[in-house]
Length: 234
Length: 129
Image (cartoon, rainbow over all chains, first blue to last red; front, side):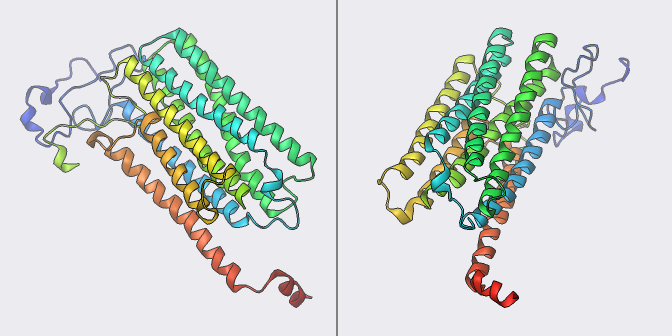
């Protein structure tokens, strides 16, 4: 895109009666390729800023991830009473451990939100600090979950014991794998914020990470309700 | 969105706070969300571990509390609103919820009918011998 290119639409708003080009602003890659928001679509300024498009695309991915989880939830709901003479959820689940895991994840979702506030005012210290607390809480969650799994397997209630336990380990393990992947992502985000600062591209990645982490907590709500609490009530 | 062209609405991506949000308002929003979510979580655990709710109503109560808490998370943590600039996000979510309801509801419905109409498992085993 050359700088001598004429911008016909900015001077004549009436030529765009349906405001397809929004308010006639045109964002240009004039920041030396550092990735500031600008649009690449047709029309004036394109359909939306890159920040909106990236976040929306990631939102679609997260919804498809939720659909995948729903299949695991459906399997668990169907197989919940298929214990094959083995232990049921009521005998296996440790309510205190589930409560601690729930608190860890809820608090980490909160501190993750605080990191978004800190990043919005470009505060390196508070962004790093809240991301660090988010990571520690996420690690604590994983540690408690791993301990639960170990205890169950030690009791002979591993995933191969019954259809109920297979589906239990699948759905809880899938969530745990998501949290693990999120922790890896969190570590790289902390490094990127530290090294590269709050560039537009880093801000977009932080936004996507925030979406990911909050959605993991929403899935955990379904998990502790359907798998643990309802399993306990049976 | 055609009726919004006059007002020239610019879409907002999911998870984005309002542009005019100050740090104090931002943090306050997350604190409100945390308190509400914690209360709803505590209520869910209380439903199971106390006798406050009539036994057969417990699953319904748990589902209601879980849906409420998901709503709190969507509003206070993901900043989803019903404003015109959020139409695309809310529509995508509505479609996701539709598919989730079809998958889970459909599986439970079908498997429940199968369980009721199928001979008990030990009879099936006998027949296969």
